[in-house]
Amino acid sequence: METISAVDAIERLLGFKLHRRVPRKYLEGFVSVYMIPLHGLGVLLVLEPMIILIAPLHWALRYIIYALVITAAEVAWGWILDKVLGFYPWDYYAESRFRMFKRGYTLWTLLPMWGVAGMILEVYSGLLRHLSPHVAGFFGY
Image 1: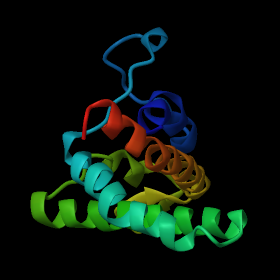
Image 2: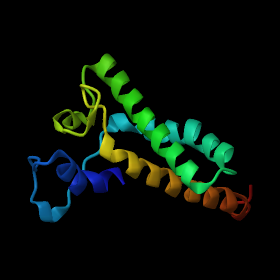
Image 3: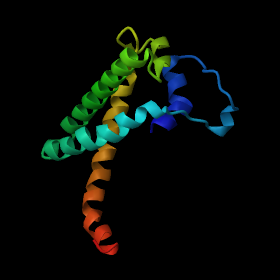
Image 4: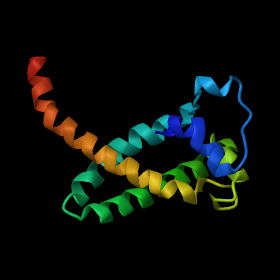
């Protein structure tokens, strides 16, 4: 979802065209290696337990929780990278009129998208939990 956003949505949110290395028709996206800890560990250590914890809640409330938690995680990770490395990989947000915080660690317009991401991850997580015993059995575990 982040790569798809990088192809088109970011320019729309910023309100101006970004410099591209290749023609737009190639639909080039960009994601930083610095995002691996957030994406990998964030899903494993935060989102996965949270999915189980909030499962009984109404879907609309879960959507809001996902939007807020994922946004908070992006802001926190951006702040940590900014303090440790002196930059964060998505610093083009600082140019947007929709940025959160002076340094633009995220965008207000991303909140709904992070809610959708959480709902998708919830379904994906359930599928993996359902398939895990079958996959383990197939491989003899």
